[in-house]
Length: 123
Image (cartoon, rainbow, N blue to C red):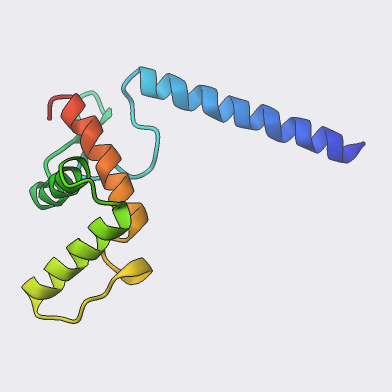
């Protein structure tokens, strides 16, 4: 009986969280603690947090990821490996790929999606 109650309570809390997140997104307000990739968070005169896409180096890498994915049709794993090789060649270090890379597969996917959102918003 308590397991059923706990399950219903978790579902209700999940629905509440989703509703709050949807409302904040609809109002254009930040929903998380960290700013989106390629942005910095600042506070305007009214005290509201706003995200500005100004990190030029991050945006350059994100645009490269979008180009590799859209034009060259590379997988995120191949994109991650290419970035690891180029960073290693630039810094004169050994190639570190996979989960220990600065740009692992999941981060490349996240950067791709965020850059697409920024491009759609006109940034």
